[in-house]
Image (cartoon, rainbow, N blue to C red; front, top):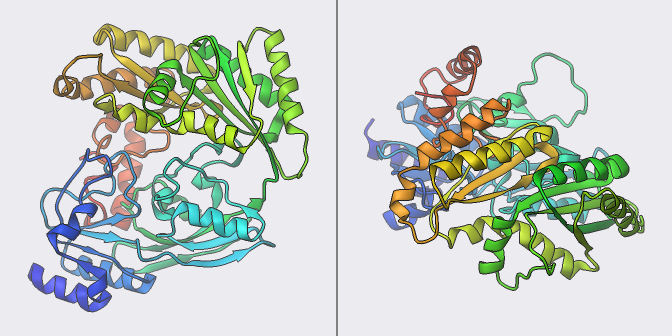
Amino acid sequence: MTTSALLERLRALVGDAGLVTDPGQLAGYLSDWRGAYSGSAAAVVRPGTTEEVAEVVRACAEEGVAVVPQGGNTGLCGGAVPDASGRQVVVSLDRMRRVRAVDPVDQTITVEAGVVLQAVQEAAAAEGCLFPLSLGSEGSCTIGGNLSTNAGGTAVLRYGTMRDLTLGLEVVLPDGRVWNGLRGLRKDNTGYDLKQLFIGAEGTLGLVTAAVLKLFPAVRSRATAWVAVGSAQAAVDLFGIVRGLCSDRLTGFEIMSRQSVEFVLRHGSGARDLFGAVHPWYVLVELSDTLPDAGLDGLLEFVLGGAFERGVADDAVVASGSAQVAALRALREGISEAQNFEGPSLKHDVTVPVSSIPAFVERTDAALRAAVPGIRIVAYGHVGDGNLHYNLSKPVHSDDDAFRQRADELARVVYDSTSSFGGSISAEHGLGQSKRDVIADYKDDLELELMRGVKQLLDPRGLMNPGKVLPG
């Protein structure tokens, strides 16, 4: 069958509204939001139902045409971008936005893969419940993408990643068959937990079309503090103090280097420094509780008082209202965008044991500064789960292109250091195409063999998101 014949077949399946071939309309689907990765495609197909997804995937499989699943296209590793051949078909789930069911008794919500994360949060809140996943891109990222990358975000410390938040999945397999695993059971010990194969697989094993997700009781009181500390070690020590006294009330514990905050202060609208002195590191602490008046401000002030007495904290402010909470969060959430104003941003998403964070930062900082004198290191992330976004900006007044050309070399510095501490070169962004080949140097050969075996079993022709995750 010719390409034009396949496109007519796809049009018959999804209708005119579901098939995009016009170059002007295609553009938004063919590159990532940063413009770091781009490709070409024969078409973008936008099915409206699981049945249509299955028929589209089946048609492509019969013609040997590769499928590239795409959600909100907010990823950072190029996992949802087609290659340059122009022969692949992008399957976007942006029309599959139904919340199928919310069950406050079973504490579950069943949603289609194209539902935006913020819409899931709002649907849960309308029933007096909480869906806790929270990301900077929550207004545009979709549940399908969150599942495909095993998204984490700022509340992993208390609620876990998408692996922990998912009870069941509905998946279209590479041959077009539909696996209906939409079970909301908390216990199901009947063999292999198949859903875990597809979470974090970035669409290389199948196309997730719906999910049953966990809900939690609504949060009715919060306390938020911005704390200055003198070192990464002090931040880790503070984490131990807060966790020891607050236990599960500790929802978020974010660390930011001074360089990170300086970029936000320079480029963020309305951002201001909260302390008179400059400090090397800052921590954003958040406590939450289901009680409407849980006395969390007092608890947080008590904990921070102990941290001052032990010389762990240097300064702190506890937010006094919703506006100040928003301002504190903006200092953290604005880092990635603010860094873009400073030229090329080389992004690395790594994780190491929490206890190793101080030594990792010290060793990696030194190695990078030796390689590129004047390099600006934008380190921030989720101390409670060991996840650091370890980003690099060029020295002031240096050449953009020259800095970009050293991206692979500098990534190796970060990844080698990460590996030496028993860490992972991807904590929550996935591998996509950016880390596809380099992962072979940091994973055990047997582990890669087993991953390839799973891929061969489910997708023997390699038509589901080829060129992603697995080394060539």
